[in-house]
Image (cartoon, rainbow, N blue to C red; front, top):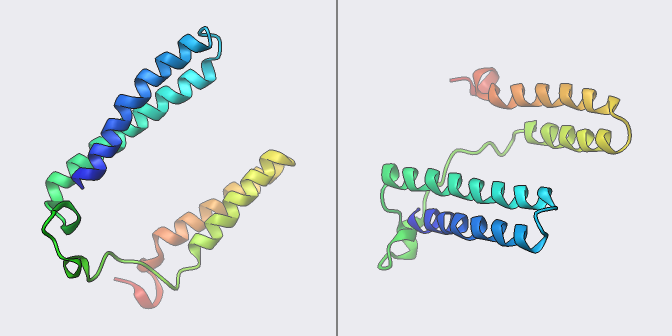
Length: 133
């Protein structure tokens, strides 16, 4: 994860000076762009710091070594639920929320309720039924 943490960390060193240059080019009158690029630099710094912390905890992966073989990265990559319908419910709730912002704000309330149901269902998916732990 060292490469990923460096990539995002160097992104912060790029975006902070770019926000200052953008400010000079716009005469410090366009604050949305300046703030957006500053926030992008902060986000890049946070993700880079998280990945650096995780790299210290996890250790070297095959992707981090130059002498690694392809077969070293084979195997289980994580725990996924291929039969889960809850991500679809959350996706529909997000789509309805954006539709509500564009058409009528009352739809956002319905979408928020649907998103809450979908999120609770996805979080507690393994607490009930056949796959309970």
